Length: 255
Ligand code: FPP
Image 1 (cartoon, rainbow, N blue to C red):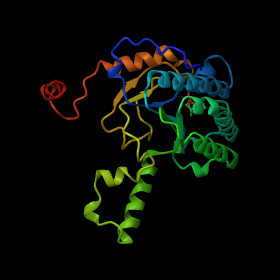
Image 2 (image 1 turned 90 degrees about the vertical axis):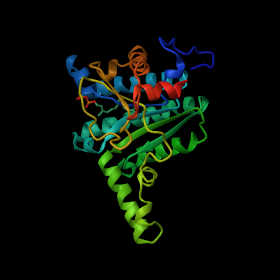
Image 3 (image 1 turned 180 degrees about the horizontal axis):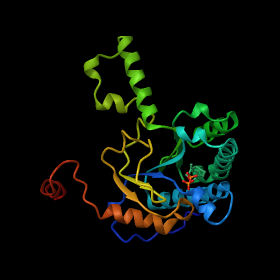
């Protein structure tokens, strides 16, 4: 992607873009099945959607994008499908590394990544280290990720710190928990997108999505490209976020 590449035209003011978009990329298997193809073919096409969505978010200046690439529960899938997903992830990391560097994209990961195959984990760590100075966008891949497991890990850390005398129980507040989640340092997502018509969050960022706007679409992930992303962003831009306040209070804050 060249520097000259134009940012997509938006049907709303750029100030109304979300800062952090999180995506549950669903429907790869169904996309392939509908065509009589192997599920893996759907994942391959889904990886292309990942490329498009990352590039578009970068061009729009969205600073945080978090993608649910592999859940804790996905380890229960057939071994061959898991192996194919890991190979696709490796291919993505190899192919996109240079562009991430060039475009100032920092790669980040959340989840129990130590469960990944050694070759995948080594490459992931390498690309994260290589891109660590990226200042324009943070691309977070949720890999072997489960939200409840993440909260349990944070709770365990807090207990250990209290037991060690490094923290008092009264100091355990929302901030203390957030600082011990895998997402420490990232703002909470403003917008959650889920493709393929499923209306649930499936253990994805349950703590962090507390105030997020949700956007569900029937489009299957391999068909989710720039136009669909802009549609989701436009839906977000048209909403009023109140965070528990009244419309009048929000209007007062804006003036
Ligand atoms: C859900 O579709 C998708 C996944 C379990 C994996 C997501 C992986 C990719 C988009 C490709 C590789 C990722 C990267 C980061 C390059 P599904 O298989 O559950 O679809 P179904 O519900 O139709 O069966």
